[in-house]
Image (cartoon, rainbow, N blue to C red; front, side, top):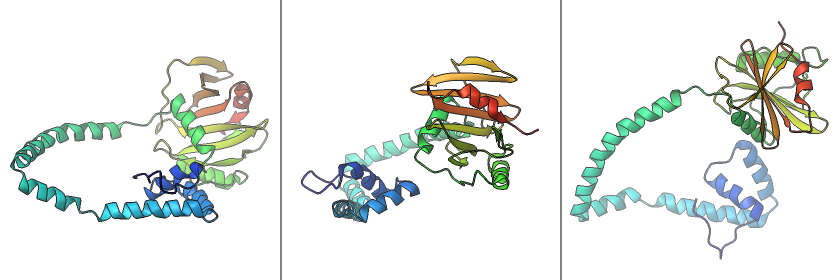
Length: 257
């Protein structure tokens, strides 16, 4: 979206980028809701929003196709260049299309970077298909039908998980069951997925054996990541490094037989 000049109102600095993103249709529903609440109380941001909308409307009304066609008719060299460009584009597009198809056919993978990205994102954004973690039936239904995994048991809670939020996300294009916990006041996230649809890919990880589990440990930025598998179940545990002991949490995770 074209920016408004310095002489125009730009609204609150902390909201200007969000307003521009909403005009371009790039905000999530959750972010839009927060922004609309702010616009209700801030006349400067409302004015900035109207200015951007006006600019967008003017751009959309411009008949670029007609201007381009007129330029071609009036310029013989441009016509020759356009014919050559069309031929070249046709050749290149075959290769490009094949490459894109192969890219999107690649199966998504759970990596330490992907796990950390999901953690950062869902600290601020609610999960899709969020369910009540205190409802065992709801958890079981959501896990089996959406994420295709067996619901876990954590700690002494029989068939239940104590968490701040729980639900299913599709950040990697595959349903992933997500539990957001609070341990000693620090946010902790457990990702639970089916490795047949979301295989694990690791490199440069430290291997730790705990009971019957083989854990792959990584420290990324200020977070400690543990990734492992049990039968068809894959797990990624993300905790603040040095503030929460992830091994104690792993010992509490139980998959019903």
